[in-house]
Length: 280
Image 1 (cartoon, rainbow, N blue to C red):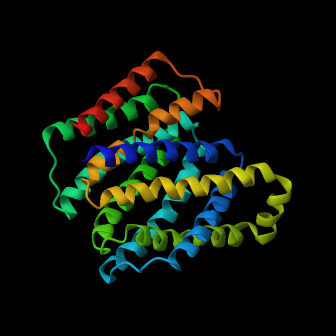
Image 2: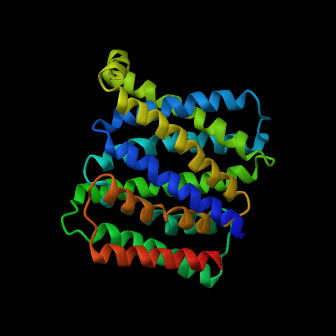
């Protein structure tokens, strides 16, 4: 992966950790994810009106990715109900690079170097160690986080293939895929009613504001990843992106007052070492 591409993916990692912290920091994560999705859908609707459409070959992937992203959103909310940010986030993100690498090999016939394979293993191993360092991770929380990791792997492989078929229109591909996020408020209204959605704007305006901001950050974070997937190996891009876990640990420690042990810091160093391997 070219160095400047890797730098942008690291920026995406910081942004990704930031919006996950915003989501986790709100008491009603389902409501927060819904307002995030409204922001994402609104911006995407504006973008698709001014950019060229992606090539026809990409449309099945856009639809498939959009639907998988909705499943991902729901599993992410579920996992955050069962574990704190420093546990659920690393398990979800750490399990995905290896699955992405396998999926890319099976469906896109990608091959990676031994050094990059080592980097992916180091990042995944270090990330999972961050989560499992705490002995009281519940089986339900672990299962929910692993399910989230599986959905991450599925949509990453879909988008890796789809954006390469888009005719060079990564921005357009991203915007059309994110239009599916309008399904989130539809699901919320179906379950809780439209009154619960609009009343929250008056009851907890700060939480809604942070959710809207998180949605904008999310667009930038994953838009960068889709752009990088055009030319970078999927497993490599995925693993480098998941260094966001290190930033999540820092955010969890500084802003959410979550404890960080020496073993967890060591695991962060391993993740950083894996990122260096991917940059060589």
